[in-house]
Amino acid sequence: MEQNVQKLKEWLTSEVNETIVITKEELNDLDTVHFSLESVDYRDSEDTLDDYLSDALILRGSGNTLNADGDLVPLPQQSYEIAVSGLKLQTIEADKVELQTDRGKYTLALS
Image (tube, rainbow, N blue to C red):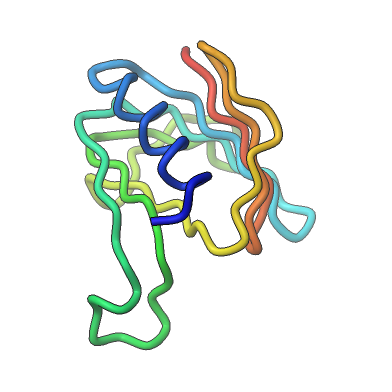
């Protein structure tokens, strides 16, 4: 596991049993998720049978996202995936992490 991925996993693991607000910017789209974190796993793309799955951190727990009407709706699964290909940590603080991946820009903050 790459060093930046390990640092991010350690930060997330330290926030287990907390609610994290995940903001993701991707292709002029902004998503906000409120996620109650229960555990963090790492998926290595070499360990999967599906070629389209990349290395990722899998956040386990439950969450809600804001829909177009501004209402909180539950996530469809009990997990949230952050693909870590090209991960660059821009800020890592006690209560917030800002990062960039090949897929988008994320801010993770304690709620």
